Image 1 (cartoon, rainbow, N blue to C red):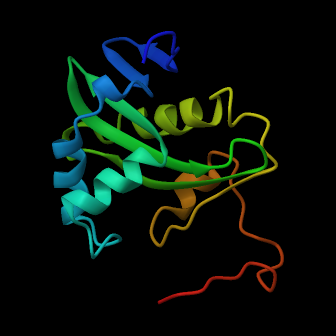
Image 2 (tube, one colour; image 1 turned 120 degrees about the horizontal axis):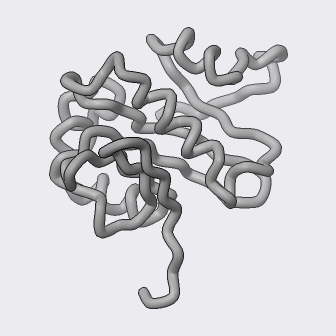
Length: 144
């Protein structure tokens, strides 16, 4: 696409970008295939998910070292998912920087609600001003 401006943040040798040219689909697939949260992942399902999402690549020297995917209408709501930093780069603040970069995206910064589900990273997201839903009776899911 010509004329498209992609979101880009730089910190030292690291980049966070929504440019699809920087997204290494095979690296994302390799990580998510090992993750326990997406049990029915296939290359085809990942391709479809990426196509219909706002994707943030964290790269160092052209190598995919982190990722975050946002499902959104870009007006009122977003769902943050598939967030990861590969093992060698954890503990350097890159995960926090990636999520802060996501939250500063021009299409997301003014949204009423950005939600996520995590079973093991609650403290991490609490540190980024996410909160537990005060009224869990209003949050509903339909599970297959």
